[in-house]
Length: 239
Image (cartoon, rainbow, N blue to C red):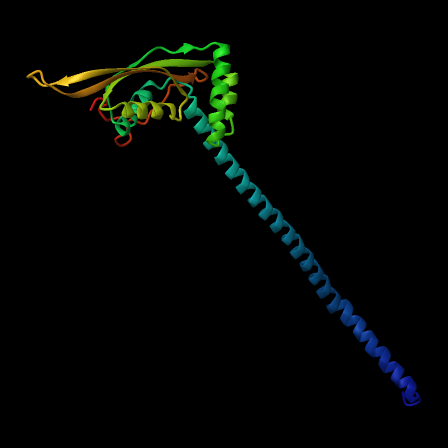
């Protein structure tokens, strides 16, 4: 070393430093950089997976909302055109309609269902379709009508009211029923009310209405009702 020039000594020192840096880079820095690279790659993959899971969650929520909407539309369609006559519900649905109209029910008679002809069925579908559009229904019930056997159940209602307007209001309520109905006939008879003495005290209007309720026979399952829940179905029809 004593015979080396200053320049040679600097070169040797520089080579030593370079060698040490090489060893440091190979033994310490490169493994650390490799770990950092792997971690960065893993983070990127995790980010992609999180994005996919978020998109999947959003899709699932959208599908769940769509399913709930379809279930609601299906339930509404089944209410409009049920798979059974559902006679008890028909009878009890008349009570609140009569009450808000000022009509007192005297008798309710439900007949046997009769299959309507293809011509009548087509006319019924075309008649109900505009009403469904006005109410925001997408027409799914009409599609069911086109593809299923439809039956009509005649219901005869006898009642009395204090005015012609009350009877018309009751008829209007029947026609606005969510379930598909059609008034076939409406007869009004004016009768005088008298005291025991024979003096006339007023006039009562007797009404006889014949209504067709529509349904299909597309289900063989026994229908279920909700008459055991709360007070539903427990009111006296003729009070």
